Amino acid sequence: MFDWFTQTWTRFGGQIATGFVETFYMVAVSFAIAAVLGTAAGIFLSLSQRDAIWESPVLAAPLSVAVNLIRSVPFILLLIIVAPLARFLVGTAYGIYASMVSLTIVGVAVVTRLVEQAVADINPQLYHTAHALSANRWQLITEFVLVEARAALILGYTSAIISLIAYSTVVGVIAGGGIGYLALQEGFYMWNQQLMWVIILLMTLFVQLIQLSGSALARKFDGKGKARNS
Image (tube, rainbow, N blue to C red):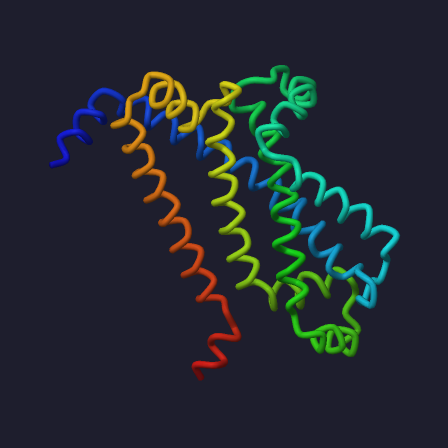
């Protein structure tokens, strides 16, 4: 029944493994950078909106517009637009390193919005408590905001990782490497349907594993859920 899978793996197993390693590397590096920058930007946007504790619409509005612009551009067009920047930063507009530039940019935009929403859902009473305890801005973020929103943040990060995996398969159109490049070159152009289904099956299992892990971790740190169950 699964002879087609065995035959395809015997022929392309090495290339599939290499493609997954490249995809994991691109997504891991891009997400690591996006998580840091996007979390900072998301917290700032949420706390700097009108009527927020750090109300500063003059600064928040341009940042919000920039995030919206990045998210509005189809990723395949973003790859082309960012190619000169990638060539400047890594010396080439092709390959996994060039792809990571585009993935990082879109990753920052995605994480920013997810973090902004997670922080916006925090009970405003938390800020009054932090103020009553004389918490400075750094303490407010690290000891109150991030702790209170950690379950939502974990779910947001999980969604961001899955989005980056999806985006990473598109970079195959510019010879960006990864599993998407193999699917495009050997699966689509050579019309190898069996290889395409093997890649789809493995990618589906990979994404499901990430989603289940993220959901389980979020439940572990969900203080609200623990409170409801107690």
